Image 1 (cartoon, one colour):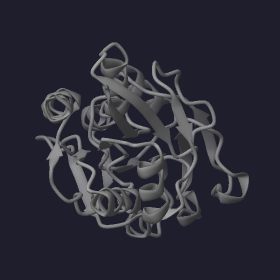
Image 2: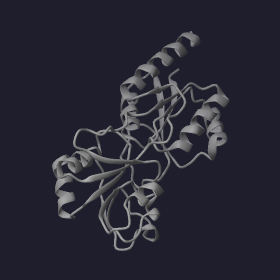
Image 3: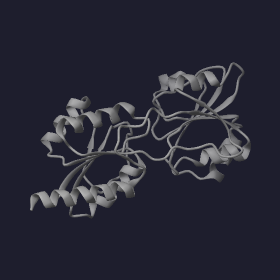
Image 4: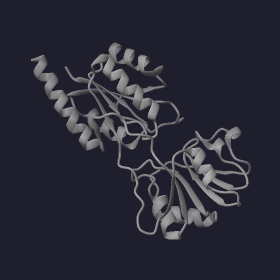
Length: 253
């Protein structure tokens, strides 16, 4: 029988894993989304949307669906979900693998100021009015306010109540390219970029553009990494799954 795999998704890596497993008879995969994106990209495997109800709820799902391997490919900042995944897998004795893409590192010419939270990022902008590009998604915008002028980019429309006064919103989904990002920053006369250290190539172009324009960047550090085992990408995940599928087949034989 194929190995039942639950992929906790919402990232580029999760989609890449789903595409690879869709055509592989060794696996029967389900991709789970938290439901924060209104229209996620189409996927080649069955999709589940919504929360599980904490670690206990996820553990119950793993049992009910006879999941044989859990792939935690959630966003690097989804700390609670990562903790729930580790706990649920341990409760059921289900092998779990965390996928954590490498974080961005400052390059020569970068003007980064690293902070530990969104609140610290807002404080780091200082008291003098600045033109700010907020590239942090739409969940934590309420921390930002006057006297700054904000350009916000999000996949889905933010809650109007959370928007800083006078903020301009652009709806777009990556990947983005450096030349386009530089043109955007120039057109809006941006002085500082605020970003979370998500890593990955899809949205890294804004950092290269900020570097080329001599702009400062306020970078929010990641939460602590998940418990091991951890791999950096889809290829390593597929190798891990292949090993587990082989072990399962041998036990079945």
